[in-house]
Length: 110
Image (cartoon, rainbow, N blue to C red; front, side, top):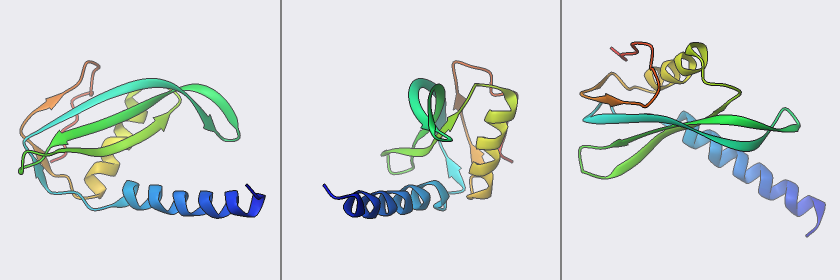
């Protein structure tokens, strides 16, 4: 594959990822699950072991939906807050239940 083809594919993928990460969310979800996976990812030009925060829900139609997939260097109150604030900025206002095996530091989107 030519370098120009790789660059074009990468550009297209970057646009799709940005569209996913910035799309509008519903205001309410019945329940939201928050958990982090640890993966080796490329961040700032180097490969590191990092937490990837995954936020999922079951929407009102009963379909599983991924709300966010966000890489972070570690699981801290500041990194979780940044992700939750992003969800709020994208329209999430209420979830009737939150579940996480780690502390969510009392986050409520309202």
